[in-house]
Length: 581
Ligand code: ATP
Ligand code: MG
Image (tube, rainbow, N blue to C red; front, side, top):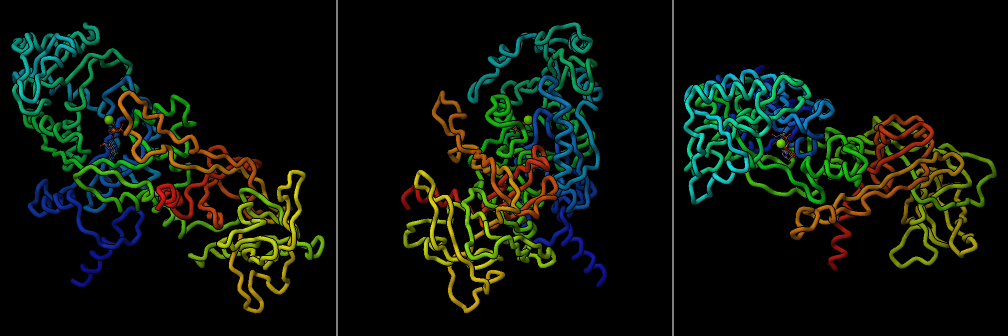
């Protein structure tokens, strides 16, 4: 008994994908359904889900929500989750996407049970279509899709029957077989379900099940020239795999009727569909169509541009799987649509990197600081703590010398009252180093400060105030002679307004793109300990934010860092200021 309790507690604590302890939260509505199903013994208590992407683009953060939900439920309830490509639309799909999707799911930390393709089931789907014809539940319509759409009717008026609706079973079968055999051109015929032209839900007014498309499929080649529609394929694929809980986004709610109709009429395994709200985020777009537009227009450098909400973009930006999973957990799963603040996503990354990222010093916009009383030629290698949040991360040595770089922003010749950083006559702490006092400045021909001159207090090594005197500001710095040059890319929101889709009629949503979403600093300076930094490694540049070494373009002789996220949400602050608050 005791053992059992302990074991159960253990399972609870490690049920998340990263194995970390999670505080208890209340069950979401899908978990409630599953727990009820398990209580009543439905499907023998079995839980099986699937993640069903169409391979027509790269996955984005919205897909991460679906992945975490589907794989998360399987993990939580000891079930299975398949990865199934919904590849029924050959003209838009590609192996490039199939590969990237697998990579992204694995990167997020999940492993599928079965790897399937809807195209694996084309033959079975075809045979079931013949069965529907034979049962008088489907017919070949020889009108154009436009004509068919016109006859659909409205919410208050029933649809008009097609003149081909009452074709005989034999004629339907013959035509459908010849459609498959390639005898007809695209659009010449379609197969439609024979349901109810007066149905309240338009989707049930004899929906199209198959269309002719003479297109090369990335997996089945030229074997098929008729392809099933999503609504005909999806439920049956779920059923073949014996999926118990088929979870999709709310826009498929009305489709559920057709999903159920097909399964019922075919008398196959009763998979059931449940809908949840899709993720929307402020200041970005989240549909593959829009993201593809950005890639094709060149507004971004590719699907993996660090400004994109794609998983490969976020990965390059410096997001971690742990942060994305924590974010998905925090936003929860509900049945009403809403938009989540981008700041939540950024917070999830800060929380994760705060615990794990090594602190280093880097100067983005350098201003030379000369320590006039420093012994000529001497270098002091001082201990610097790698991560105050993690003692086991240890420390490293950083070189302090007579010529340093500090941030231009950290010096003001004539400071206002609230400015406590360096200015003439002021003493500040150089982190881990020494206390320095500004004595004077050197200006260039334009009268701009080119160099600040300071004296240091030899008794303040380590940044300690020797006699307890107060020093308000602590600043980061690097030693000019030892620092390594690095390109640094700073990112801001992709779009200027919270909802990029909120534009007047006829206005392109792309006019909402933020022209300042990327700022490149061609030459910043980073401390020498970064010499051996591995691609993709993450750091906190002290006082500046979290940065990741770009795994794609960075080279040992030309380091490129992406700012993953600032230390605080400066955007919210700026917005408040603008609003005059
Ligand atoms: P998009 O509209 O971005 O092109 P999609 O729905 O067409 O996305 P699919 O490849 O068909 O993309 O989606 C695979 C799964 O991911 C589906 O179950 C879909 O409901 C889910 N999904 C897609 N976008 C989101 C989102 N923003 N939030 C939550 N789940 C999503
Ligand atoms: Mg889709």
